[in-house]
Structures are given as C-alpha cells and as structure tokens.
Amino acid sequence: MRVFIAHANDGSAEFIRRFLTNGGCEVETISGGVECLAKLRQSAPDVLILDFDLPWGGGDGVLAWLRENEEAPVVPVVLMTRGPLGPSVTPLLAPPVAFCLRKPFRLDALLRAILSALTRRRPHLVVRSRAARVEVRRNAVAT
Image (cartoon, rainbow, N blue to C red; front, side, top):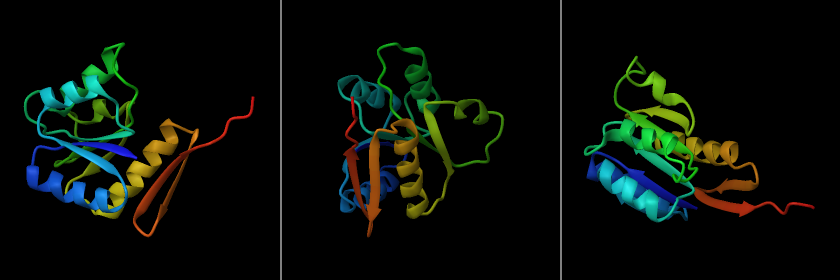
C-alpha cells in the first residue's frame, strides 16, 4: 500500500512513516501544500494522510484542488486536525475525506481509519491487517 503523509510537523510525520513502513507500507512524507500538489500530480497514492494545518497551501487548499480539478486523482483522505471539529473544519469533511482524526491520536486509530478509507472508497480491494502488517490485494472481478 502506498501512502502519502502531508504533515506540518516533520517529527510527527517521521513517527507515522516509521509505523506504517514497519507495517509493510510504502510511505512518502510531504511538508507543505505546494509539495503535496506536485506529488499528487506525479502519481497517486492509495491513501493521503493530510494535516489540516499543512503550511504553504494548507490542508483545505489541497482538498479544494482534489475536489475541483478534473485531472486530480481520486484518493481517499484521512484528515488530521488539532482542534475540535468546528465551523472551519466541518465543511471539509465531504469526499474525498473518508475520516477525520483529532490530534493527538493513537496509531491503531490511524491504521483503522486508513483501512476503512481504502475499503470504503475502493471496494474492489481486499485489505487485511495482521500483526501490524498491512496487505492490499485486488479482488478478481468476474465478467
């Protein structure tokens, strides 16, 4: 499974990266909104973990681009926010946002959010998590 982590805090992004990498994921960390858009234009991950407080464009800017740009990839998003889900965040919870996690959160909660986002947005995938390892396979589709 390929994951992009777009986080305002490099230390937190690295912590999450190590957790997911140890679980068998291919992970790229991103530190700003402009960089996130450039990476998404190059290739789409299976899931985007997006910090609402991302500098240089913000999480809201990345979400606006994903929603409004016809060339944008269809990517499920796990949105992270440090504050309560108030009026500034609630309108952002429409697709492609599959989940919103309030920081700080437990890593097992993040993993559950990722797995649910994948299966909800891409029902043709079979996602299993065994002993903190993640396996993603495509279902065979009968024609």
